[in-house]
Length: 335
Image (cartoon, rainbow, N blue to C red):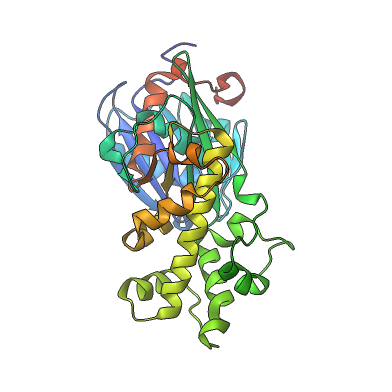
């Protein structure tokens, strides 16, 4: 694999259902410069957004682009899950005058970003634990619930994306059993994503309403978070406590699935909005409660990733040293 697969200047983009952020690396290893932030729904196509970012980047114009998109990626094509953008990599290259490009799934990119994480990028939850050399797991509640892992072998880095948010989940204590029958099922199931995302916070809020004698409930996640933060609404406080309990349990589960002695990392806007309400010993207690293998859980470092800027750095790192990453460039690079 040639290190000049992605000619520079390199444009990198983190594209979600709401916003698209673009940054530019003028040369391999050069500092990133944020050049544009575009509202996804303000453009009809990704080509329009890329063209805006190229125009904002100045001269010399970008020669390549690496994009992570919040939706399924198959080869050179992708579709945003929560916005009507469809990505055709070769078409974007042709329309925007780019020599090369690559599409990544957002959680594939998030996993790869762990190869670039420094202590300054992380906020430990509970005691600081020296990471082992095993896999790392990243997960994040947002519009949905993403999960991916990272492994390193012989200096080569590989992301293992998956659909951990769609496994089964059930009540584990009397508190859960009291409200579980009232949880709204999605496609007839209760999965981690049913609860552990923005809409899931609302589902939990509705399921807990009967216990507080309420008929009028909040319908927007930010309102639930704000009223829990202020302490003015016991129902909202209980909702967030239930959300964090199940998030901690799920994070511990994913740590066990992968044997993630390298650490479990939690990212995303929902987590950041609730970060001030995390009680580290309580959260870590739910994470650790994995008898008979609780000793393994206790050995796994646990942190938040408060800033997604690390993902842009990761894509720039891929562009600078593509040979370091186990990606199938033959079927995924655009040209």
